[in-house]
Image 1 (cartoon, rainbow, N blue to C red):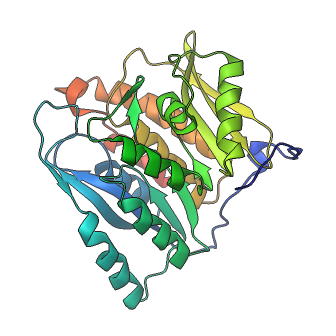
Image 2 (cartoon, one colour):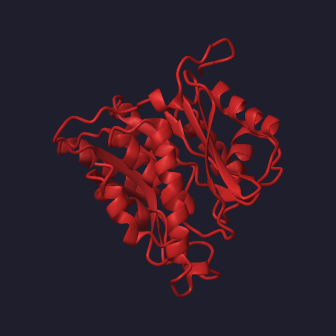
Image 3 (cartoon, one colour):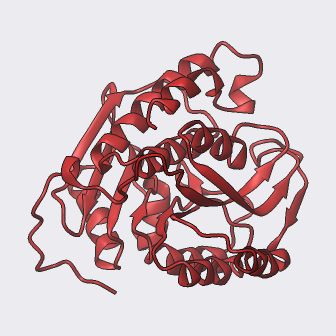
Length: 297
């Protein structure tokens, strides 16, 4: 693990690029997420968002749900046993990857498969959204073993995008709500970076009528990207944020600009969502905003 305690950050996040896109080239990204038949989240968001940005999405489904876990009834199928053969088949037909974007995981055993995927594609950027919980609570399918396994995966991230709940779980710190002090935020960021994460985007800190996303890294100065705070919370906004962020990064935008793009689009999507039936349960609607995502390319 890298330790950044003596490292002097040199550049602004606006000068930090994790990927340089070649003219005319379509980047290829493995999307390691679950698939829900109903409800706005996971691959239902990832595939259209990355595709709109001109990215070749290669889905690697970690679980199959009839609907997302906010609903009182849903079916759940763990695909862990399928994954090793899945990535073996990719390699046999010559699939190459520019990035690996990981989200919800169905079991701790899947961590080994993702790490093996990263080992086989050492040049691929590893972007991890540790989808574990929100509002101080774990999602219902998460176990202690899965939390521990997620920690092992998270420490390998080039870009890690936790919310406050997930950052607290990963670092063993106490969740203190959505409006922690600046000192508490810095403690979370430092703990994540000390474990070896290269860049962290800590999402969803509330300050009055603003929401702030903190951007920190091994070789950049910690910065804040702020936007207006929408008065409601919706399922799938974390997936939308991380997907737009990934799309922007793999389109050649800087880390800070990618965070700004994601922050702004999620806020707009909340207004679109509020006009839809059953939006409070179904989740965030983004389809009419995909034209903005296409501009990233």
